[in-house]
Length: 358
Image 1 (cartoon, rainbow, N blue to C red):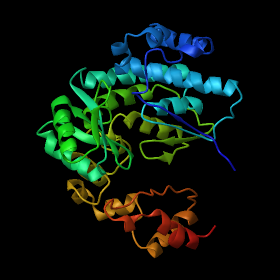
Image 2: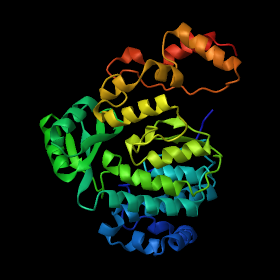
Image 3: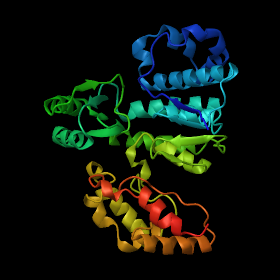
Image 4: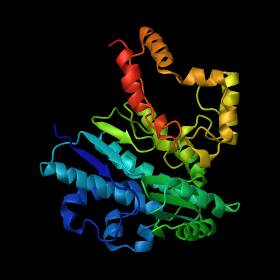
């Protein structure tokens, strides 16, 4: 059975004059966006100036509105509703509008503030991004470590094998671009981004955005939304909101992302969470290594995860099923990125799921 997915673009795909051929079809939506923003968005998109359109507080509303305009135009011309929607970075807000999770006017307000918070976190001209082609992930990370020299530069988007985006302070970025070329990258080029998105420099923006998101209503999606921070499906509007706030910073995944524990936790759990936050090594992100590993106690791991042999997993899951739990989320990434045999998905299906009742 054929299924249809819509994937909405992020920053970098904007250009002055886009949608010129669809002016009449887009007019009402751009007028609605303009009333929220307080300026004529269509005039900016069609006439520029380009340097203003490329500033993130203007780029984000422009791309969101353009994306939804094309989405609605496609539906008006008979294209079926999608079975799945997703978005790259900023494009996730477009996906949430397409899935009826967010009202369009709320999304316009959110991305405008998101852009403002991001630009405030790192003033224009002090940080940026670059695409690196032709090196593996570990090579890019090693170059970034060497190039940092007390500043920030890190791999932030793993777009595909051999294509990684880095972000950070300008001087560190220049050193990293040079280092990647010397390491054998086919290309290492600066992107037209006005801030170092998705890097740890965006943490202040994430904190500010979280407060705004708490004031917005998130509805249950009418179609599947695959969220790009963890490539997982989330039906819970509150979970969608939480992940949306953290999308501007990789640290969004952590319960102690701002140096304080968010959500209920015992005193012992709070201590562990805060220590993980203090010691987290992003160069070892997702790996069974790094300074953060020593902060995780056995009790903490047992309380919040199921790790062990297939028979142990079957026993733990069976007990939860008997207690009434009827849904689980399996993280399918390798436990150790350097060891392909550590992938969990196939073993889970073959040795655990097959042994569970129903």
